[in-house]
Length: 249
Image (tube, rainbow, N blue to C red):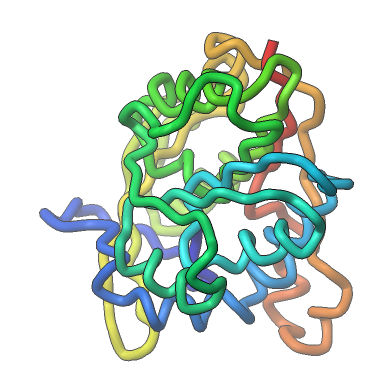
């Protein structure tokens, strides 16, 4: 899950961050139509997922349910988990009472048997974690052999450039924390993320038992050009997110 708000790193790390419950309704509305989500990340992720009819899919970090709905529309049997009860309430409102939605912490054991899913989709969630080991281990466990993890994260060079533009001299090769202030629906929230270099990402995937099939740096949907003319040019000429397709081995 992710916001379309412009990222502007701030130096302090406030005591309470990533409180999606406090602005769940506003976030759901923003996620539905934003350039980053509706015209860039979600379409790119769905293209990588391809044909889904009959596949069992875990939407890990399902947020307010926009991706869940798209996966279900493509014929998948979808289960969604998220840490935020507020976002899950928004997802339930959108998806209906029969949607399989559960509160779960991706850093803890997931409430599923081994080999439960054909695909796990982690849409803009891994960059919330300092240590990718526990969530990747659980994603690997619940996937069948040969199943796929399809993940999107902040692009490491985008994070690096944001820090440089803010006047700081970050270490690209370090795993480091940064915070951002989001404002939507009249509510301001502090968000905390972890940046890491590309090699640290691929090392974490292989250590967890995944084989890298695809690394993708897509461009936004051309339909967004007229809707977001200034931001479209920025996004079309520099990557914001990085996408992976990984196979469980």
